[in-house]
Length: 242
Image 1 (tube, rainbow, N blue to C red):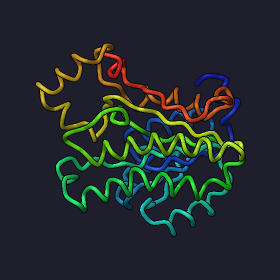
Image 2: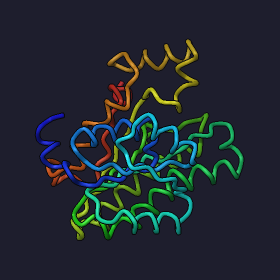
Image 3: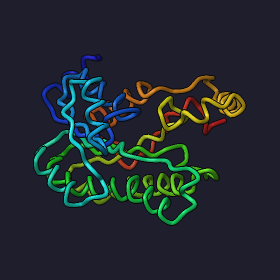
């Protein structure tokens, strides 16, 4: 771990919703490597139990980001933090064409991020919020309309809160991951035709990993990004540029 990250994050508390796996875990591991106390949430007790066995450095809590009362209580229990990273998210694909499926995705991916930002705002005290958007924050997803709509909205929420929270000294930015190796992308990775199509458009010629997102997260939540707020940073191997 780089010296600058350790100097800033050692002994500080960081909350990562959806931190039990995938992108959330990858980012959390980088913060833990830098000496931060990482508080990770999972949607179910099974997720929490599995993650705690695989990454014991985190402090895990079962949390439904759709439940405002739970989120508020959790924020009060954790107290002051240096950063909030909103990684909790779902992609239901075909189910998003139903009203219930669409509403579920929006409630978790978008409204959940607003709930946690609101709850942790008093405890950030000049800290940073990092939301997780997507390349689908910039274009449509015919296979997952709610996912794309929610990620477009996360970008808008990021810019809005960056302005609203600036007077508190809180910066709000977002990452826009490209095609990352997680459980969410298992289907296209397993399809040889789709996999070849995606990698053919990615200039760097490979799938990204959660670890590829970690340096950008460390930077955007640190004083090195002290004059950056409202930014949506693609981490996609050049996919959107091609």
